[in-house]
Length: 165
Image 1 (cartoon, rainbow, N blue to C red):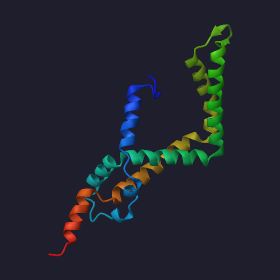
Image 2 (image 1 turned 90 degrees about the horizontal axis):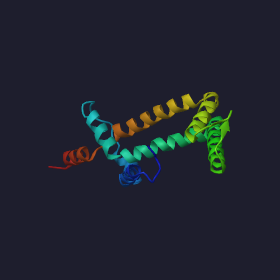
Image 3 (image 1 turned 90 degrees about the vertical axis):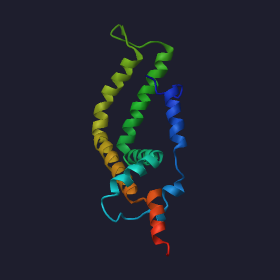
Image 4 (image 1 turned 135 degrees about the vertical axis):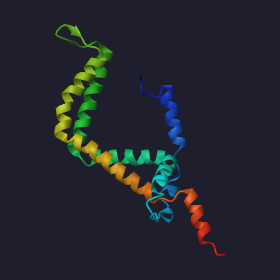
């Protein structure tokens, strides 16, 4: 299965995600943040906010991935080396097929060999800890936002509560 933009389902998902992005002013509106009065409405609030801001949370995740890669020079070098090797392989395969010990290797086998050879480099660069840091930081930031952001239903109820009788 190809993940290029020529794939119809990938294109549809990208379009749906792009359309689902809420305005960043709404996402970061500090007037909408409030500590829940009790723990009971918290799960409902989190689920509603994750459904509502799903595309924005995806951008938060991608931003943390980029931040992690840019602040780790060794990881940046490892990624550049792996992508460079894949680029060189694609150029070499356009000219002629690569043979090792008289046997022609397919493009998938060559990419697999690059992945296998780059595994120790990623291990030395700390890619495993970077992955878990990104997952943990994303979970923390997203749950923090989803827990404190007042949903539209709660906002209406609070406004009705505060009106003078």
